[in-house]
Image 1 (cartoon, helix red, strand yellow):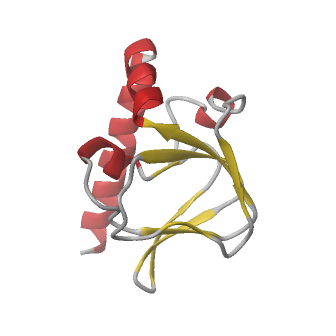
Image 2 (cartoon, rainbow, N blue to C red):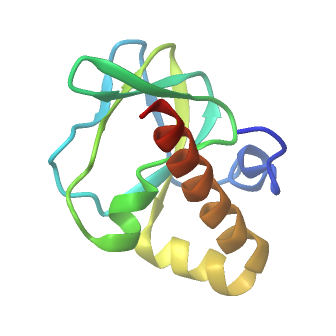
Image 3 (cartoon, helix red, strand yellow):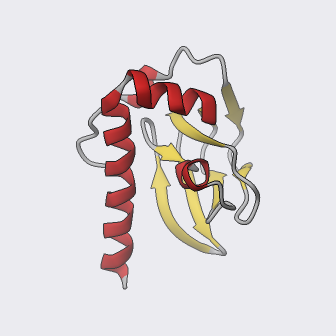
Length: 123
């Protein structure tokens, strides 16, 4: 995403919930319940719908925020393209970030709008 409002990879670098995935590993699967989102700290993640590549996510990008926000099943599959380090953000941490860092909520909204615009442009 061009011109991120916050440097999320720096904001979450000291998180206690850092998970590592080797290249090729599935981070989450389309259709499964989503109780957390991820911030990419290192590496690149493919966002897939079936066998179609929807997006690439790199350091500072968010994954899985839609399921965290609306409590619905994952809308896509996330697969590590390279070895990755991700900060896992559960609902409690998300709500704390929204309350304590208002620009975080604005950043999440901008990410969602940018993805919607890119999707519409592909139609």
